[in-house]
Image (cartoon, rainbow, N blue to C red):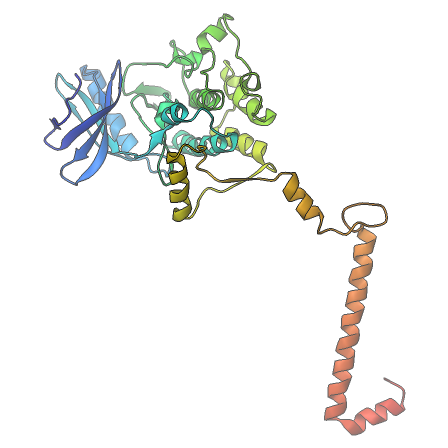
Amino acid sequence: MTLNQGSLLKDRYRIIEVLGQGGMGSIYRAVDENLGVEVAVKENLFTIEDYTRQFKREAVILASLRHRNLPRVTDHFSMEDQGQYLIMDYVEGEDLQERMERYQFIPEEEVVVIGAAICDALAYMHSHDPVVLHRDIKPGNVRITPREEIYLVDFGLAKIIQGDKTTSTGARAMTMGFSPPEQYGAARTDPRTDIYSLGATLYTVLTGITPEDSLARTMDQEELTPVRERNPKVSRRVADAIEKALEVHPGNRFQLAAEFKNELLKAQSGRFSLNFSRPRDEVKEREGEAQEGSSPPRIITKDLGDHEQEKSSSLLVKNENGSSSPSRAERFRGGCLALLALLSLILILAFTVFGLLYPSLANYLLGMNLF
């Protein structure tokens, strides 16, 4: 059942508002009255005994996760005939879905930074012992704080892989457009499942349209519309990386989250200088601009365009062949001349000091024509 605003859960968590609802439960913003801090409460309405035991076991594993792009799970409990609950850090700010609704366009360079951060979180989860899968990555589960911190939130469908055994905190569920085909049936899900969902999330943010459903694509009922067909401003390499992540066959996707991240960043190499942190005053300044209806980017990038290239090239002296930098022979000749001049200066200084210290010996050596 949905918890009412103001109700007290387990004599500790005061419900402030509903953040989201689904068939399996809801997620709430609440206040931990024992500690005086805001938390997120994830509700799972499955209360069957097997699910309850499984939930407790997996909640302990989720609580062990510590990563800069993941909220902490701080508490867990089940309430008979009501539901199971995960208590997590509340991440203030907005999610990608809200940002898409607020701004019609999110720049590619900002999307790449967000994608790279989520890849870092996935790489950590997938390398954890036991492996943890998220299985519900979508724009609504990626949050960005006012301090530019990026979080992957909502572990309601998280799955734990222990050896050959796999379990999940609730019934298998999927989100059309964001879930790969193996998540629909009895096929085994693995880290490549999260890679698909992240690819679908980035596709949606860059184009404003959810990609064609994976199950329909598997049955040849639909084909994936290329990213650049929906948004020609996206670079070809970023589009290719996202489309590879969206392959319906897991073997054709990136096999590791780190591979996906590297491909996204390489696609931006040379085009943008990414700045992952900024002075607080600058953050406040841009937030003020956003409130006035200006463009949305919150992650600074520097476009290395024609003006910067012209400025840099103006500092170079062209040689006789018209190239924009000295030839190797010219650099070698110049270096030799500089070295000879330095040696000559050292010899002159050394003889001067020697003559001052030993004038008689210096005159004698001069007479022998040794200097």
